[in-house]
Length: 377
Image (cartoon, rainbow, N blue to C red):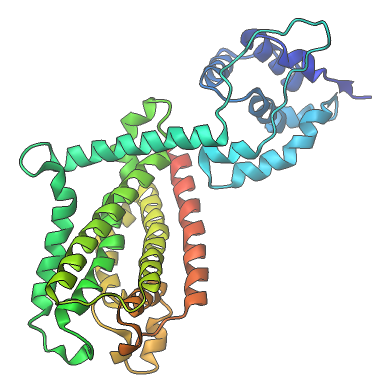
């Protein structure tokens, strides 16, 4: 008959005795110095004892002891633990793992507090928000400096790109723009390119170049991705708003025919960019080849992005092939929000949402894989 483990007694022990007992009970041996040091540090960093117990229980040594040691409380959590371990959600996945708590019998004095309580969901969100904001400020100062225009380049740099492209396109024969000027078309087309192209360039090797910062406990590898993505998205969005409002004020552009659709179109482009950038960033961390060819990939995407010409000028059946690329659909939808029915726009919204969702999940999986590989080295 399997031996029954008193899990409540083990949970009531202080850290050093807790780990000694876990090694002996779940692995059937005394702890090795490296293993004891590793898990002592993890407990001090705030990992829950439940996760430590589950890591021991599901390890190769722990599974060999499963037939001789009965731990029903842990066994009930093993399937959920294994499922959560596969999710590409980083630290947040463990918020969905129940915690085994020490119970105190009536009249019994409560035992010592063994570790800092893990933050709640909203406390964790607040911590990550502060970390990402600090990384954004650091990246902005590092990139633009504090002198002269300094952080104003945050908006000025992409704004100059948009103005330059718009002026260049204004000299193009406007045969492909049936409504309004070429400048108005450019200002609702080229800014979408900044969302995915600039962001992909910035996220490449983001973990490798910032790896020294991982020594700070609150900073996680995925924060480097999220901070740079948010910085580039804010830069592109702010620049677009400045130039678009200016063009409306001077009469080059008009107010959007459908503001809601235009906003949703911009968010759809940003959604595509998010998944695409996570994918490129993750691949660049695990393969030097991807880093070298990333610029080529970005250049090859330009003709198919929908940002340089409207889909309606592409003859059938090539137009249908073009719209298989979800970015082109996103841009067409964004453009429809501006022009409305005065400009022929082609997009498949349901198909685009499915593609964006699949790309986002794949990007999160690639980011998680890259993080695990970096941590392993």
